[in-house]
Amino acid sequence: MKWYDWYFDVVKNRYAEFDGRARRKEFWYFVLMNIIIVIGFSFIDGLLGTYSSNTGLGLLSGIYFIAILIPAIAVSVRRLHDSSLSGFWILLSFMPIVGAITLIILYVRDSTSEDNKYGPNPKTISA
Image 1 (spheres, rainbow, N blue to C red):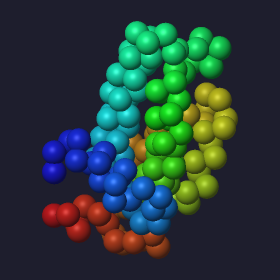
Image 2 (cartoon, one colour):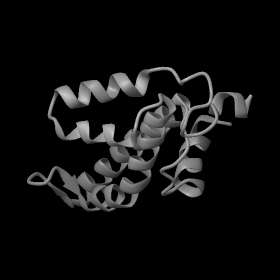
Image 3 (cartoon, rainbow, N blue to C red):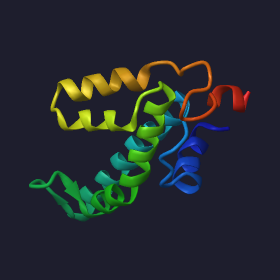
């Protein structure tokens, strides 16, 4: 798979799939592609004058944010499942600094090498 295929797989094939596991590669390529798209939309919003400094979003960025919210949460939950953690750990994102740092550490952790209660190891499936 090419790096951008991981993004399209999450958006098209696993849009609201909260069960199962997601490899680090799937999660981080999805994040990378989101950053690239948001930067592009922000640039276009700035050119069109649709950027609002009050909200920190422009029209296109806001629409994209709403459209990508469910798959972003889903891939985050599946990434936590890959480390044998419940998806409820995503609620740490509501804690300002400590929560974000903790979640980044959890997202960077390696997979549980064996099957867990969330499914088989995705590394062995794709190998």
